Each structure stands twice: as structure tokens, then as C-alpha cells.
Image (cartoon, rainbow, N blue to C red):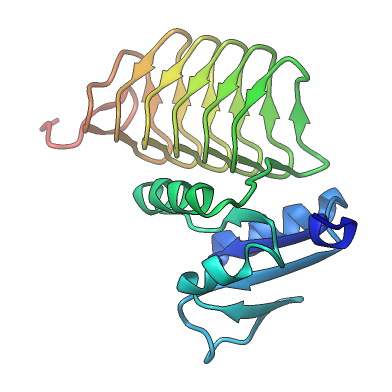
Length: 215
């Protein structure tokens, strides 16, 4: 890999989330060139400062030109599938960390993770592959966040929280220390989770309760 190639980043997905991924990558100063793949190409040829150079299916042909890639899609399931596809094609998926984020050197961060502006990831936290820690979100000490989870803007996980694969913690939600959030859970915006949540549940409110419950 040449030096110029190693400084080029391909972002898959040119929607709103993808733009923020590209913006964080630019702010980090690690890449000289950023481009997008998006299935709206060629009708969509440019997004903000960056070109759209093809569709998702073109990734295979571009791995030599752009050996590093980023996940620019917000949907958890699709992001997990895309992660596996890109890895199988030979792309490196570096973590992208905005320079204003506070990331402990003793946190463990997987492939394809993005950590946005003003977010905090504290000591001994573990972020598995494809995790999003969105703007001003907090992942406290000793948390474990599973593959392709999304911690939304302003959400906060207290110490020792476990969030299993493919779960989504909504904007401004808070999770009490030591709570376990199951797999493919949706926590509504502004919810306060004070007890464990089983796989596949959607919880809302303060305190958080299953959405189908009647109050």
C-alpha cells in the first residue's frame, strides 16, 4: 500500500449520518482524501465537500485505490452486514474519532467504530465493531457495547452497563449503572432505564417500560 493510498478513505453511505462520519474523519486530520459510495450515484455526484464515486456494489473494484473504508449508514442491521462485506473484500475499517471527543487510552475500540464531537468514552469501556457513539454521548467506565449498536446524541450509559449487539439507545436516554440491555433493543428518546431490558424489547418513558404497556 502506498502512502497516498493509505491516506484515502471511502465512506459507504452519503446520507446525513455518512456526512457526519466524513466530517469527523476530516476533522481528525488522518486522511488527505475522502470519497463516498452511495446507490443514488450517478444522480448524486457530490455531497458537501466530497465526491460520490460510485454505488455500493463498486466497493470491490475500489479496494486498491481506497484501502480504508468507513460505515456511513445509521441502520444497525445494514451497518453490521456492510461491516462483514467490507472486511471480506479486504478493506481496513479504522475507528474514526472526532478530535473533540474524550477517548480513554484504556478503552477498547473495534473496527468501523465512529465517535463524534464532544462524546466521552471512559476507561475500560469496550466498543465492539461498527458501534456509533454519537455527538455528546457518554459511555462510562467498564461499559460493554456490542456490535453495530448506536448510542445516540446526548445519551448516557453509566458505569458497567452492557448493551448487546444491534441495540439502539435513543437521543438523551440514560441507563443506570450495571444495567444490561439485550440484543436488538430500542430505547426511546429521553427514556430512563433503571432495570435490565430483554432481547428485542422497545422501552420508553421515565422510568423506562415496554412500549406496549398501558399507563
